[in-house]
Image (tube, rainbow, N blue to C red; front, side, top):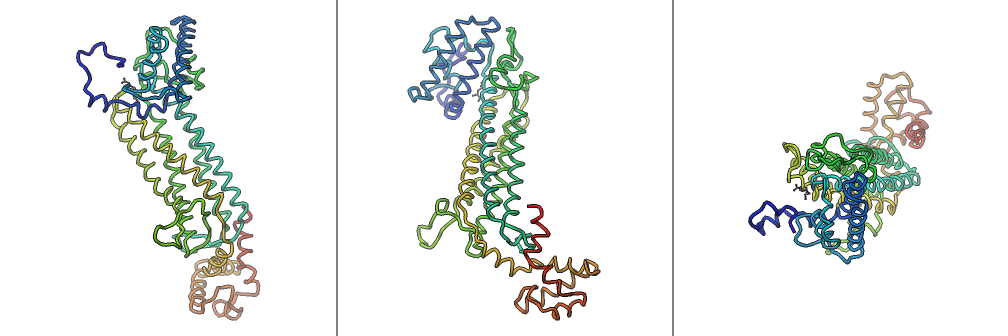
Length: 437
Ligand code: ARG
């Protein structure tokens, strides 16, 4: 079953065979491998390297393999070195000697490169679509909850914001992520088929034909780069890492908000789990798992970067290591986006608790200072005066808005009756954030 047995005198060791095989994971590329091969033989016939009849028979054979794999009649397994060997051996089994012509003017180096690019492109489009759905959910949740809440810096109550504004921060992050993925797709959209092993081929082939047939923008410019470029996988793994980083931040907030101490949101039962010992518990496992899996996606990026570091041109077997890392990173981010979407579409926002937190957080202290500035006090002085007011209110156990005018005037005589309207939370919001909503 070896494609390269000719120059070997003895059998490959079983240990080496098991070590070398990529079929257990590159079986995932079966469809791209078949589609790429069909484009290849049709190009060969257009360029009079195979006859139309030969190409037609090979195409039929490949299509019958595809059908049988998809119907479960043929399983992609066995003692094959990789998915490419599996296909060629099975084609020869089906259509006989003619199958041996499939690999004319092609190497597994450009074959695996084109398979992987097609796969990465299709899956990246899926990721961009899933991000689109997540964006819709976030927008809906935000629009339905234009409610007041404390905004934080250093996880200390800072200024008043709305839940909508808070969620729309994530909308901006995931919109950038979607653009980043689309940009990566745009850059990878070139066909390496026809680069052959590293130096092109003496056959008079037409790389534009396969590039067009496979839906790429154009063939790659350089053969040696074409077979050894894995930048697009790095770039996608890096996009996935940034998506995970954003999702881990949102997960962390959901975990904090759903704690008994905050109670800003209730997670739906559908995305929570219980404790085997403590009957009262409802744990935010979905958010915790997304936060946790972020490390794993970063790991794939680091692993792939390290694998590629210092590799000489052109193809080296090290590159086979790209697949498991990319697949794992892709599967993880895909699942996490879907779970995040499910979690956010079923979450309940507790407006009352957020309002209470606003009230007890001196979240209008900055506006009291702004008020004094409007009355002619320099900002730095106003900042100091309001600091004193906060200490006074803390001792008294009240909010700034609960002070009488006489109390205000003890701190500065420019305070007037209009202070109450100026620092009212809803008015503050109206003047600040709401005008951007
Ligand atoms: N399984 C290999 C990979 O994934 C396919 C390319 C093998 N090419 C070779 N010359 N050995 O990289």
